[in-house]
Length: 128
Image 1 (tube, rainbow, N blue to C red):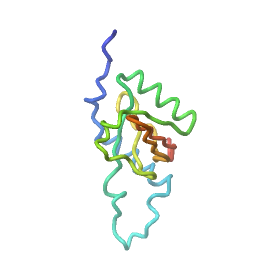
Image 2 (image 1 turned 90 degrees about the vertical axis):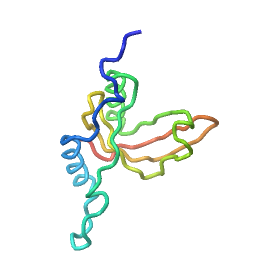
Image 3 (image 1 turned 180 degrees about the vertical axis):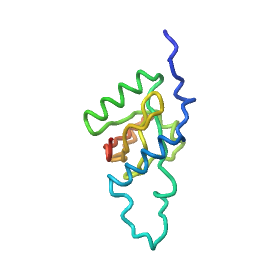
Image 4 (image 1 turned 135 degrees about the vertical axis):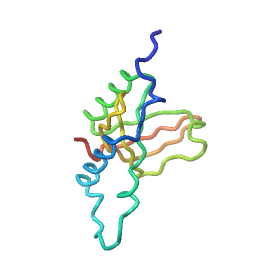
């Protein structure tokens, strides 16, 4: 079996391109609607977590292409990966491709725990 070209565990998910993406996504998803006299909200100060799916850049790129084509997606993982801290419906995150480039702002739409597996479904909120 070939080694992946990019080790996704070493991809940097905190870079200027991510911050620029977040500014655009917040605006287009209308997440910055609070009047400025309230001061900055958490969403304005801290971008949501960024992540990439898969064991290789190619797998991640294919997953992103499918999610963008369908405007939704899901992941399945062992429950132990979540350490009993499952995501909540409405939680935002930034889906990146295999190179760490942000491709979509996604929102958790459903979390199902079935036996030892957790299925996390999400919908695309914004894509450039």
